[in-house]
Image 1 (cartoon, one colour):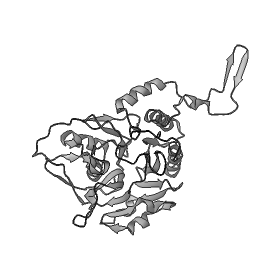
Image 2: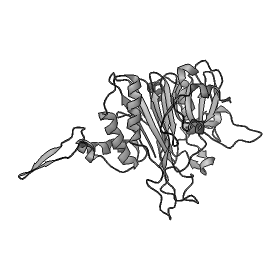
Image 3: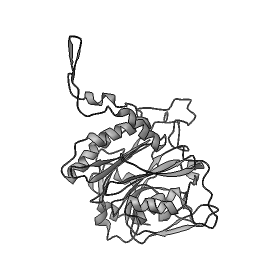
Image 4: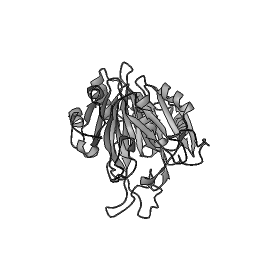
Length: 371
């Protein structure tokens, strides 16, 4: 499960928030990539695509393979799950189990981009959603069988946002890639994105104005407190329910007057999607179909599988500030991309180093081991 949304302040500036939910903590790494870093994307049977970063970016990543003594991990091995670049462009990976299937035919001599490398490619090379969308018209992208997930084909879809507020969904549905402009700036998981927009048509009655009294016959009913306006929102944590709730919160939450207050307001909004362990669990006889991402641990010795918010991110797109909190913290550690601009080498910091941290942690990242 994942929930992402764009929030705008009183001046229309865009801020982005997302949660990531899985059944276990993975070896997440916070990675900084400077300008001029080289990447290679390779899929068996196709020419390698080499590309260089034009923009610095900061990202939550996952190793794409197990390291060996002969082949230690390099920056290209860290796959972007969530990131922000120095132009205010964001990239997000969200679970989407229906991604895999027959894909387009691409000549073996043509360089293709693995979907696993979409994050570094988009953040490292482009400044806006428009640029990403135009580049994808010409660049073939194929799903990759992920060894660390038992060979499942990249079970994700992807969203891109920019500082101007534009939003793009990159979705592989049963193998076919589609690009969708996202007019609501919200994304969760399945079904496919157009279905979520159609479902939103069922919620035209939503408003943030409390209807706190009504008359039935001669009886006047009166609410004892505020909040009845949210009674029509879906209450479950399903992808469908969260999409509608995220659209509601993004639309109606008060528009903050300052950037600092906007980030704080966005943090309150994302609290509505924070999920503690055990709120819902897999039944004892579950066959794995309940898991958003196949290949992750299911029920085991520690009890039934339960999806929970492993980490939450807030991105201030205009000021290029990246805020993160892990499950073991209620506060956010913050990173300033402008402050990192003078760093000329890639940096990797295990995400669990942020447990219980709050405030500016840019200095901590600068002290991290280069890779």
